[in-house]
Amino acid sequence: MFKTNQYFDGTVVSIGLESNEGTATVGVMAAGEYEFGTDTVEIMTVVSGQLTIQQPGETEWKTYTKFESFEVAKGVKFKVKCEQDTPYLCLYK
Image (cartoon, rainbow, N blue to C red; front, side, top):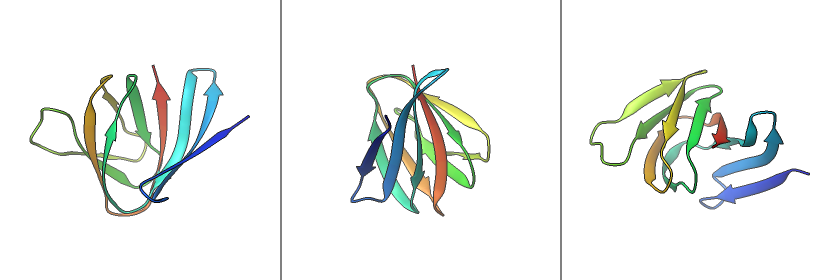
């Protein structure tokens, strides 16, 4: 069965599932700025639009667009900016 999650007063919504590649979520982030924490390594792929990311310990931001992926280490916090509602896929390792 699927598990739905809402964060930041419903501005980030995801559906959790078990895929052939492991545990994953498919979700949408509304336009805004967010800070997420990780319990595992996360590999995020932008489905449409773009996400601008600041990795932990970094001062620069990097933008990822449609079908581009980035990895975030376990046990850290990272920042995300969205200029428009942006769907994503997140795989947990």
